Length: 260
Image (cartoon, rainbow, N blue to C red; front, side, top):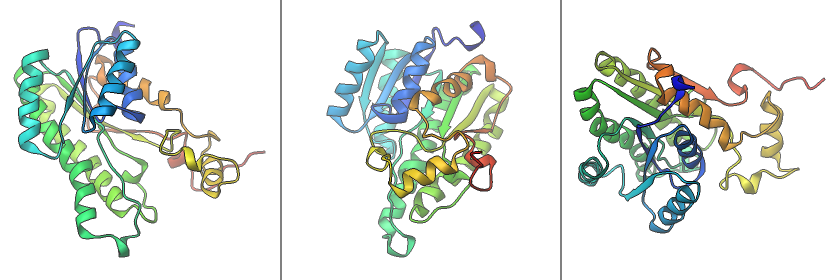
């Protein structure tokens, strides 16, 4: 449908070399967008570009750390010179350190905040300059259920994702007059390579997630594609400063759903 078409648009996805970032990038490409992927690991970038190209997508990759403002500024200038304006930015790059707060080093805490929150601010600011001039743009911040809830051993991640939720709302407020929509996606628990070791029958956490999720399953990364397309397209032109939680219903319920 034309309302959801991304034909002629260029989408930049940070951390789009694997996992949920790759799933969202694929969705945007299937809707017609050209992909610009960022990452920090050469081997992952090479594998990702081969994957995108094998599907017939237009995709280019750039290696830099989103927390390094100088490197990001230089890379963005090169990207815009080689590929033109960025119409869609997906701030997906992120890390998590599972350490109890009492045992977490301040340096570890700061690194998570830097990647998950400051990196999104740096990239948004760089891309928004062109969007403001053109009076058009879409920014999608990848938040988390931890933008709303706490959980043991992810204090830095929850702090960063909570901050990212509020950054989303504030950037939406500042940039809405320029026809820029800034929204977020909050994924629930998804089946990725990172979660594979705990997604086995009998694992207490696996059993907890399945029982706690009304949908009764882990999310498939492809489940994020539709929301990404929606927020990147003209279908969401009057939606701003919102976080859409793609979580199978976890945040909708206070406890274990009934199975009978």
